[in-house]
Image 1: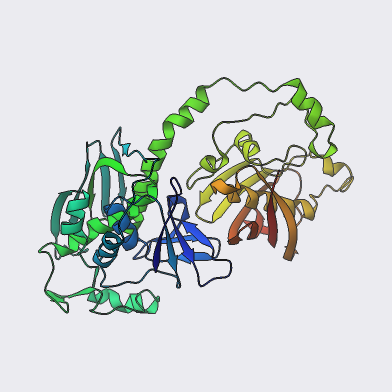
Image 2: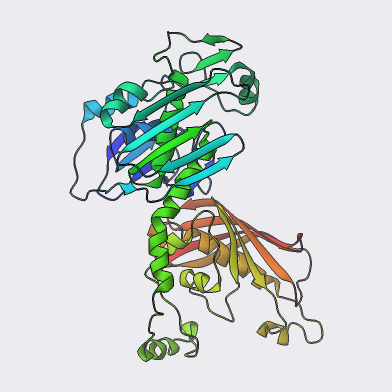
Length: 444
């Protein structure tokens, strides 16, 4: 692993040197694809596992912008803590950049419950974490509370090593989660015994490592936080869900301002110039709404999009808009809906007396939904997705007026301007079509 400096506002991102094109994955909540035992980030088929320890080290010393180059699918485990990373950063030194990233002050409490896990964050002038950890049987229950600063991070948290319970090891090995695991880089708890190759570094080393994980996972918000986190039996899943909730609070004022703002005025010149281009005909009676909110802020995990929001992202317009709304966005997966009515213009000739939705339009629906998912990346905003190819296409059942076409797409590859996705269309839970599609992003 190599840490490289990066420009102001660029954030933290991982670069896979072992893959063609050196693809990058930004350290952001929307790129979280797995939280089983660690936090995994991904874009398409590119994934980076166990990112929390290096992210905690960078957040602990206040680094906002850096490139993390890797020649494998995860950072080195080192000794299971963040102290080596913190030491190397200290030796390299840091630079204060001109564009400062202001911390976000929590304005109202956020609370969530996931099974036995309780997470909350309250307004606070600094960044404080209070945590209680234990296993399901209540063994090795530990409590620790700390005001997190660069100084306390270095002395009180960075040395805390990861740990697991002996009975978990068989499951972890079978699922390929601890291929490099040993007592050199983890503590193992068996019954009442603590197995380690050195004495515990802190009396509360287990809960301190949990706090270390929280810091790394919350850094996915993308900016420092001012608040008091209270966690009971935290997990990577709960940590990242709290990060998403914090990000939603950050964005709420902007979304509210957009909601109550008057609709934008669309000039006659815009309609005139557009209508001279047959490929971009606009009905003057249906003005196109524009928004100051970037497309990538609409396309976020947990978001749902109505028709007007879809048209802020896609350039398509009726009768060629094949998406009525988006019902789910989760990582690299998106689900959308098309209400197929008898008023669809293609039913006039396909076929009279026996209306069937053309299969190629179902394919187009898959491509449009994939295009929406690509817009979650800021660098793709304002681009067009050109359909390049379709493979393994299958049409299984006819789609008729009155059907609700559900379009489910999963990005399988995203490299530069090229994207690949697997799409499936269903009606009432039954598959009607599916395909692998490839498309290219270009400037409008």
